[in-house]
Length: 298
Image 1 (cartoon, rainbow, N blue to C red):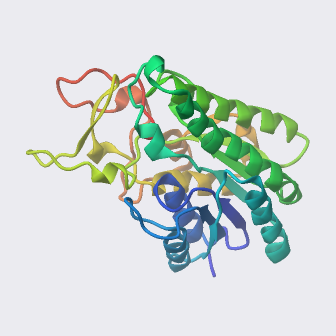
Image 2: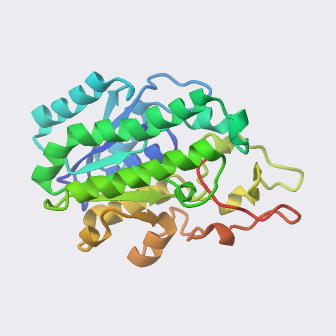
């Protein structure tokens, strides 16, 4: 096994598909041993399973290990990290990505009085609390290795995106990043939030082309966007690899970073050689649509 991360062990939560899958694949391509966690062991409405992601990570040059884990269950998460200590004796990278995107998508563009309290629980239980629990159990291993925690967040932490619950949850993730970094300051562990742009996940790949052949998505209140401009799920993965190998990564701890900005600084591109756009204002709305208020993962 070759690669710049050949001696590293990583966990990517919620990696059956989407951004998590893209990150796991890039870590595998860099030679890492990657635990791919999630609940999906059989294809459903959306394609992708933990076993398929792990197998592809292995094909790319790493060692993919599928691990069925429901991140709502603390005991299951504790067992995951106990297994890693027993089998490897180290952990270098934790990517907290698990998130209930299909549930969140139901409430896009809704004012808060139309978003039921259960949406709050869905966003905070799987998407904030789950990150804390994983970090709690991973911390002793990461402190020993001087490792890296990446919390997948969104520019919705900074300005209105999708709905009130989404934005508050993402702000909570970024606050978690800042406070974990504060507590870990005496160690060599780096903690960052990562802000992808609009990512062409399996969910968005279901958007059919229009009469002109373009695949357009409308985010209520934000605009209509051409998915030809979207990032692939592996673009955020390249950001994680860059951070994991960057000599200056400790200078970034406690803060959120846009994937496209890291690409510009570290010199990586998307898998097709493109440099996806960095700022919400730079995304190109379909002519005649409203100007975007922000971007995020639908």
